[in-house]
Image (cartoon, rainbow, N blue to C red):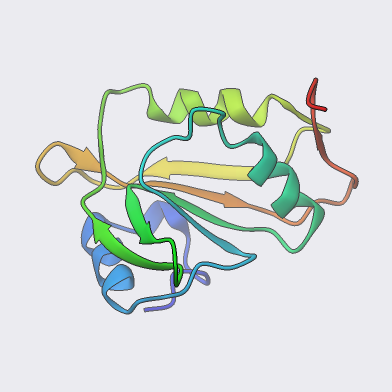
Length: 130
């Protein structure tokens, strides 16, 4: 399943499950996160904005050795997940062009999909980060 050419707004939980079962390898334009990292996503926003853009999917645990999904159950929907993504993006200068959405729920969990577009105001950098 090619989710890169589809609107993330149209993707459902089952679509991401199918995508993960195809064992797509994480790379420059694809990032898996089991949950939101303690340090946030700002560096990934900047990196993808400075290159060709990409897709971050939160709720997928990857096999660190080979970069393929090993568990995909989503992330607990606490109602504030989208706001958290906007806060991460606000730490990047200039503000990156992106879209974010949550899939439908399954057992109270969702996947958070973040499409970051290639920036036209490079370089992008994280504010107050050495």
